[in-house]
View (tube, rainbow, N blue to C red):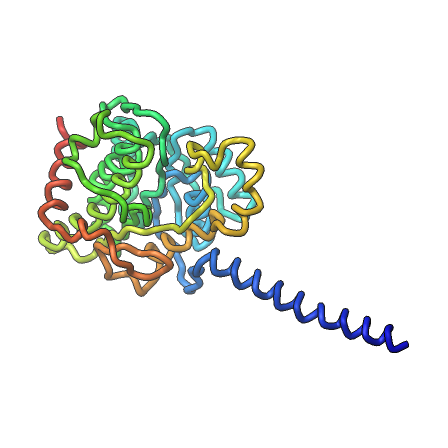
Length: 329
């Protein structure tokens, strides 16, 4: 009997250890998920444009904006995939009448012009420059003659923003979100023209550079708007966090069989697409960010950006180059 009693109490000791272990894992997973945007706000009557809305973070951003009442233009490179995403969003409770799929390829300026010319809303409340590509394995030029990552992540969004700026100025509080990355901290700027040269290409540099340019864009456009006396439009850059999205499709981590091996670890240590959407939603919708512009956000807070962003001369040069490149006749 005495031995049985000892065995019973030994087994009882395992229970609190198991509970503590579970609690520890739960808290750790919650940490990796990051803070969630929980502010009660409505987007009813608002018009939003989201690039890369057919999958990943963009899909989740479009979903949340629509569920909060916004009319969402889903800009997708592939219209068929965009329509599939729209049907999936409808199954998830979205109002399909407020989801408009538009074929826009950021690597082709003509498609951006076509969309902007046909955009007949009286005003645009929210523009989320979300689409992007990451770590392309080889150097490629777009139809417009620019390095693929540089145009897809930065120049295409710059052009879209410029063309839609009059609509944003017509809104009571136009908000622009540039989906950047913490990797912009690793970025360095060669002269912008050199971004298109093959000698400056490797697998990682173009992505980091393009994300730095997006933060610099937010800073300089803010300066330009304030000089014009426009205080109703704000633009900020965001970091979604470490998210396992389709952006990783060109990386070693997403190649079979590595993808299968690391899948459980990816689920635990990485944010989901929905988690990754939280920062952009915070900047686009929160009452606390309504008057903040030219800043970089991560984990729903303003963070220190790459010191290059504080170089007003470099930011102005990048902006002028971008105007000349994207809007040249």
